Length: 171
Image (cartoon, rainbow, N blue to C red; front, side, top):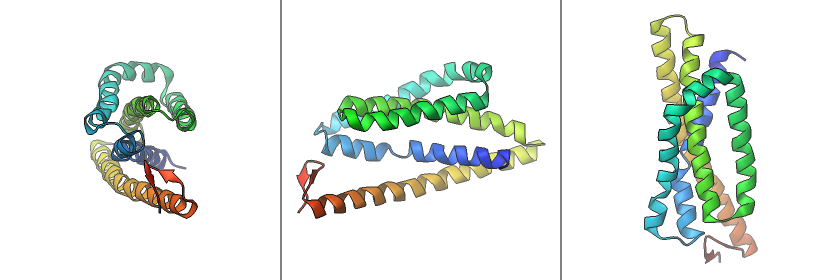
């Protein structure tokens, strides 16, 4: 697999991670029965760590190396994704959002920094940046379709089995 393809796939995963916020807000309102005002603050749990990490993480990533940083980042994120559903509180959702914000910044720093290593000149560099940005937008659209498909499948499964989900009995 070429290095450019690895960067593209990494950036696509970034779009999938970052596009889930509306789904999390909807889940927080419906499942955890929190107010719209409280759910509106969930975006801050993603944005504030992004702001802090933007200033701190680059130096750490350079020292640790791109590949090692990426492996550690994905490992921690996968672990959090496996743990959070079992805790099942609004605070676990907030923790997930904080971690996803940090993962977003780390992956973005690594992806943009890696572009200079795999391109030969300024024109190829600009072209590749444009390509990964276009694919990021495409990945965001695809991920929204995937999220809505999973939610629709979940509703159908709940309706079929008479399970209460999102605070409403599916009949």
